[in-house]
Image (cartoon, rainbow, N blue to C red; front, side, top):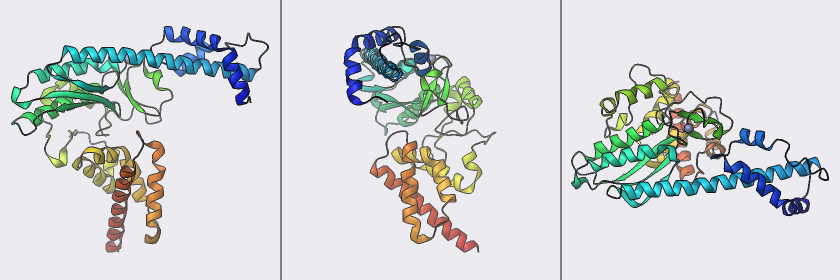
Length: 344
Ligand SMILES: [Zn+2]
C-alpha cells in the first residue's frame, strides 16, 4: 500500500505521462469500457523501473480516471451540440429550454416524436418539453392541453410508442438493441453492451421494466404491428394502464396472490408512487411474505426492510419515498395478518 503523500507525489511527478496515456485512449474511444481499458493499459508504467508495483498500479488507476473524465466531457459536449440542434431544427414543437437526459442513439426517436407532434391540432398546444432515460426506457415529456378532445389518448400513445421503440434501440448508437441489466438498466446493442460492465444474473429475463412480464417477442410483435396494436392501449382505464399480453401471462410476480395485488396496485397509481412500486414490487412481496414478526416489532421490521432496499435503488430514495414504501408495506402486512387470523 502507498500513502497519500506518496500518491500526491506520484501524481505530480508523472502527470504528463498520465495525461499522455489518457489522451491516447480517449482519442479513439467514445465510451469508457473497463475491459477495453484493461487491455489498453496493460503493464503501462512498468518501464519506470525505479517505482514499485504499487506505484505502477496507482499510476494506471490515475490514467484510467483521467481517460474517463476526458471521454465523459467530450461526450457531453457532443450531446449538448446534438440536442441543441434538435431543438433549433424543431423550434415549432420542441420548447427552447427542453431538457434531454439521454444518450445520442435515441435522438431519432425524438425526431420522430417531434414530427408527430407537428401533425397535432393547434388547439392542443402540444410541445415536447424534454425526455429522459429511465430503467432503460426513453420517457418523453409533452406539455399539452389534456382536456382538449382526443389530445390525451394520442399523446399517451405517442409516449408509449417512443418508450417501446427505445426498448429495442441502442441508446448509445441507435442500432437494434435490447434492455440489459448490470448495476443499472440500459438498452444497448451487442457492440455497446460492454459499456455496462458485469451483467446481472437476470439480465435478459426482462424486456420491459414497466410491465415485467413480456419477452422480447412480445415487444417485437408490438413494434412490427405498430400503432394498430399500440392504439388498443387503454390510457384512461385504471385497471389496465399498460398493455398486457393475453396469451402468455408469464409475469412471475402475478403468480401469487400477494404479487398480483402489488402489480394491480402498481398500475392503479401514478407518478413516483407507481415508479416505486415498479421498482420495489419484488422486495415488497418478499417483505410481506417474510413478515413473521410480532405486531410490536412490526415498525422496526418495516423500517429495516425499506432501509435495506436503498442500495438497490435506481436513484437515491428520498425520505418521502421511504415513507411511502413503509406505509404501503405496513398496511399490506397488517391486512395479511388480519386475513390469516380470520382464516383460522
Ligand atoms: Zn450501440
